[in-house]
Length: 239
Image (tube, rainbow, N blue to C red; front, side, top):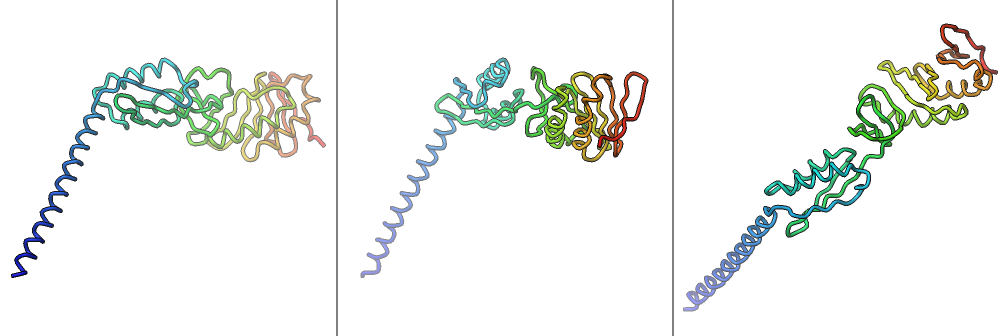
């Protein structure tokens, strides 16, 4: 007679477990439904943080309008829109319930103009932006921006004795370097290590400054050619 009692107890325990599972599922469903209701609400408050001061205010106003006018924008959609703001390198987005969103920006730090209409950052990233102020210009094949940023720093140090900053640095598809200084003086550096050639020229500059050259060819192994207007002469090596 004990077997039926044990069987009925097992059934009761099973029913209790099953009821507990149903309750847990009900709570989970209710929580999910509530969460979905919250995230589907229109966003009424947009807060920006991070490198906001270096971003154009009109672009931030336009982003705010886009976010608030969308019925239920996803966080990923907001992030993609934030990354399209000029000067933005990266953006992160966090929902602030019940009706807010926090967008944090990491902005590019401009190093130079890149070709026409774009910029290159201090880390060599090329991006679209305007109103960068007076900066040098880099021109080179796509994908060479990081190497050009590094080379610029070395060349700028080498040319410093002239007190004539670099206005433009060019790199040809064949790997040849050219410097244009703010005075208009052009230095043709050729391929290979360019800094030693500029250092050699800078050491000889006190002897050349009075002639006001407009073009110098530094591709010679032991000297360089100086041109002013249509006159070309070869300068002997500096000992």
